[in-house]
Length: 223
Image 1 (cartoon, rainbow, N blue to C red):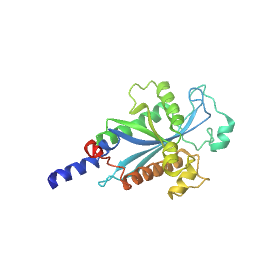
Image 2 (image 1 turned 120 degrees about the vertical axis):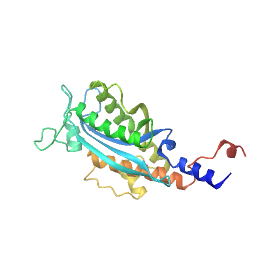
Image 3 (image 1 turned 120 degrees about the horizontal axis):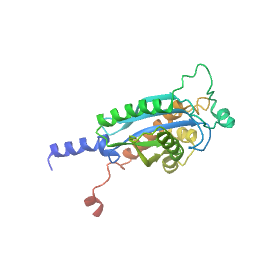
Image 4 (image 1 turned 90 degrees about the horizontal axis):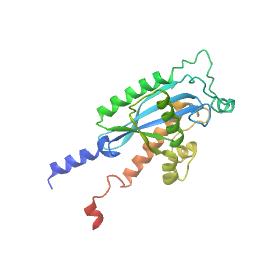
């Protein structure tokens, strides 16, 4: 095989479109008024786009952060507000309707998908089932027919961290990955999203550095 062919194949491996089966990883964190995605309010959402450099290393890119106006009739548990420190009625909190938030966010994500030639976005989140349920419920409420996200697939950093670091709590996983984490800043969507993005990139890049990516070809595995 020629050097030119090897270089072409290497460059192809180091494209985002070829790393996660055509999916663009987008790290999501949602702060809510409770645990029920259908009845409890979404209060904050943040999303960090993951990009890839020419060596195949992934890194966090732009973060989009929104304060969300609770949908009409939604429930907000006072215990949830005490936990997150969010004050939904604060006069300096510039909240937006869910429809406006998702329309703006999805526009950013679609532009990144097009730029990286990805066919769809995939949620990355810590305990991803929670955030995915709230996002899907908001999508349904807003009548959005074409979400950029896969409706049920996700990358759960709690599971990945349990495998790679022996930890499932975000703060502890970050500590073991050498990522600074301040509990005083935690439970804001922006902060948790950015730390989850740092953790996801650390684990993906660590797997690559250990020889896990690119995977061996079927011919090499057969030998």
